[in-house]
Image (cartoon, rainbow, N blue to C red):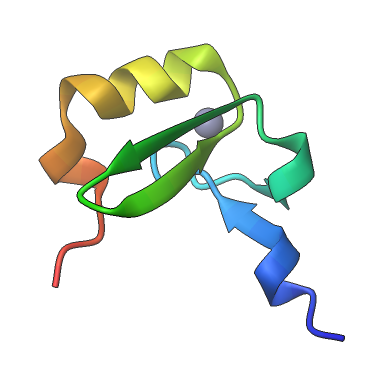
Length: 55
Ligand SMILES: [Zn+2]
């Protein structure tokens, strides 16, 4: 019943939304990231290390 699994956060702008509603997704180092739009995805793709949650 947790809503957490369904919820994703855009690492670029910080917006939260349902994974179903993500406008774009990208896999990076084995993790899937969700984005509100193509512009955030492109920003992430340009600087993944700046936005990805690293260990
Ligand atoms: Zn965004």
